[in-house]
Image 1 (cartoon, rainbow, N blue to C red):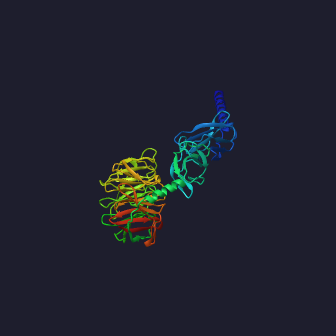
Image 2 (image 1 turned 60 degrees about the vertical axis):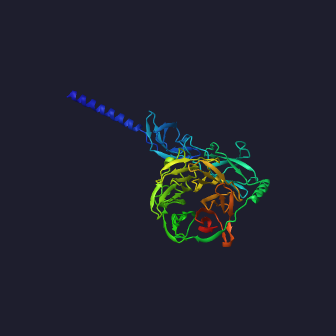
Image 3 (image 1 turned 90 degrees about the vertical axis):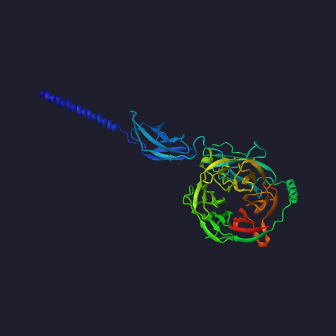
Length: 516
């Protein structure tokens, strides 16, 4: 009996001790920190939480991307600033309350999107274009991820002596402090929220028109140009399809005389008979801008017709090139992806043409390149790079092919037309910046026929004809007074027989002339 009593006493004491230890442990377990807020400002992440009773300090944990949570700091306060947050990523945080025994109690997870780009990816701006007009130099470039502003540098000497002339926050700048006839050299850099500055961009040379002496010399040359008196007889215009034309871009005629027009802002291609009577239209607005469904368009741009009267159409906004039958049925699309190189921008085509052997040639405005495809849209090869030398391009645009199978490419921001052989070897070039005959402000459409290379100029509002062998200008016109016609932003142009078809884009109409 006495033995049993002792056992019960010992058992009771053990229960009391265990209970006491459990209650002591429970009393020292810390609550999880509760978030007050987390934010990104001035290049760092600020974290704030409520104090936890019994906590002697707080450990901060962070993860970003595919990494695991890792300790980044310790504080006795209820706030912390993370100055090394991963840029261009969503950063995730947890706060651990630390007790006297070193035990941690973790908070819930909190995420903060951190502006900027990852280290090593804050790159210099890439030029889009530049021009001199109305006593100013207009500069445009692509947006740099993470940039809040840009520095525009200028020098009168190539490669050195740059000084800041502007600090725009947008991706364009107009330099008005320039001298007529002078040549300037521009480079760009980008700045982020911490005012880190990228390396300099590529240099661009801009000549601000002609000096008085150059102008006098140029006028002397102009008077020596012998233009041909080529009769143009106006036949008719096209302004309607199943709806009013809205920013037409290009025009072409097939072997039976049917006329096709890319009607950009109506998201379709319209077809007419040889006298301009509307027959049908095909295409509709693409619901997916980046990857339009077959037979839909974001901005139908240029077109070319092959020997089977199939129609190849570029879509400049989406980078898609589609092939259709003569009656508008979708056949296939060109896949340019295999021809792109590491670091390339999205394919952005404004020109298409068909070689005598059936190969398709496409211009890539953003990547300064030409692509060759087969009739199934498979890339065969590519050529070209950014620059102003032979077979180099700065915004290559529309393309035409001569009877000798030579490729004529509108090299827009080099203000010239380059003539290449069928495999892309440079033969010759003609044109340069200016407003006189033989010069370009914004060359657009190009066509071959009537022993001429015809080129429109959207800024100079002109149609010019060049000798097909030499590139010498032989015709220039901006108006046809007998018919009260003025050219306003002419773009696509095509020659079929003795007829010339031209897009007068600012008036959303097609002009049709008999030539000769």
